[in-house]
Amino acid sequence: MKRIVPVLLVIFMIFSGCTAEKTSDKLKITTTIFPQYDFLRTITENVDVELNMLISPGMEVHGFETTLEDIALISDSDLFVCVGGEDDEWVKDLPESETKILTLSSMVKLTEDDHPWTSPKNAITITQGLCDSLCNIDPDNAQTYKNNTEKYISQLKKLDEGFEACVKSGKTNTVVFAERFPFRYLAKDYNLKYFSAFEGCSTETEAGLRAVNNLVENIRREKLPVVFTIEFSEDTVADRICKETGATKLRMHSCHNVTQEEFDKGETYLSLMTKNLENLKIALG
Ligand SMILES: [Zn+2]
Image: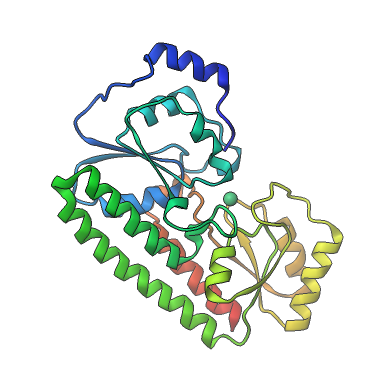
């Protein structure tokens, strides 16, 4: 996310008098991106809360610019949840308010990059951390939050076991991404070896010839059946590599965000990661 425009921030602070007043009695929670939104949606099931996601479905997370409306929404919230990595430096410039700011980086160490949720093991830790914070802020509903969390974590544990078993029984542990690679935590936690066209969440879209040749070579040498692409991708590199190697193109969803269609269909972190696991099974053979 980009930094808040300082001038707009000053104007906002003048007009809001720095302390935004809450407009409703309902617990108001705002998140930046989809993973924490989805975790909180599950934890708060059956409790009447207002849950907002700053980045609407379909929006590219990395080009996001904070608006005055976003800042007002954050200031009016009881809880604001962001990743807390490099992309969230702008949060430090938020006007003072009574909003509790919670970062994923306070629950899991960001050792790789800013996508800790891509490992179900981290998703479990994050979900528990979010539940603990909610119970502190809203003790009246603590039991419901705890029950929901317990049920959800048992599902996440099944997902975690699924990934463990998949890598263990696979003929290979190598995956090729003709794309960016936001799955470092997944690779690290489940012992996956990876080759990708671009580093991390680079905004590059034109892969160099050398990078493409390197991927093709690895696919041929290890006889890999699958080339991965990620969501919101035009698949140009993947299509090129599939044509050259005969490999099948499959998608791994990084859950940064979902499309409006996926959102309306009720896709969740769990449903998307379960599909990822199915595709990984095919890729590892
Ligand atoms: Zn990213």
